[in-house]
Length: 253
Image (tube, rainbow, N blue to C red; front, top):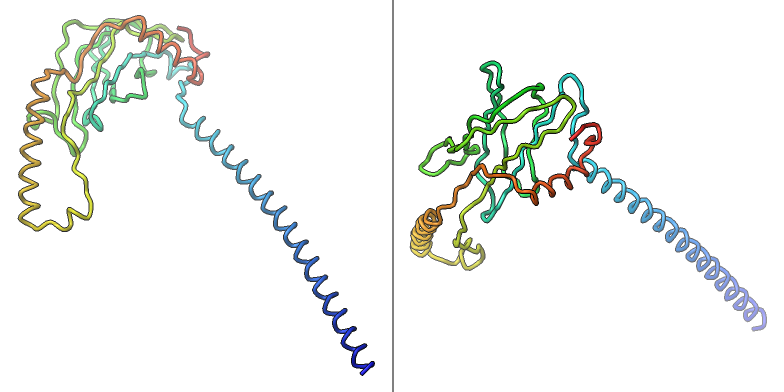
């Protein structure tokens, strides 16, 4: 009995020792796992910071440095007043030099995030904007089904470009849209439960609403493209935004 009791005690001690070793191993593994997790988190955060900086620097506007190809910068102020989801057209601006018959086409795209459009490919000299043409984007049409539509210009815009300088013209292109009251239909399970006849009636109803909305927008008489005088407040906004443009310090205003 005594021997058996001794053996039992030894086994219990060994079991406790083994459990203690396992516990210590478990604690060490937890500590190691925590250290590795902390390292991983630090690396992940660092990568996110680097990626963010990279993306922000990549998205920033950048002017070319002055050279033989980029001798001047023409800056055309642009204001975009957007009420619909997107604009379905771009604007081709025809620029003609005072000497010669060559016409340079500069494309301006409506964009609420931008206050101007620029061109750095023109040589120093006197120029004028002679024509503006709205051009539908691929897959879209302008009013009346047209792909192109010239815009009326009361006066020719004249300006002079100088080597190594940024020239801001005294006019501004104003893009705007008429206000739509059409509400986009919700898609969900109720739509799937409808019969073919119900869906057909809803389609006819939506078409009538769309036509009525188009007529209402026409009555607003909103000109989608206008060439207007540049006011000092908008010019101040442009000058402020130019401070964030890379290489702007390489040019004179």
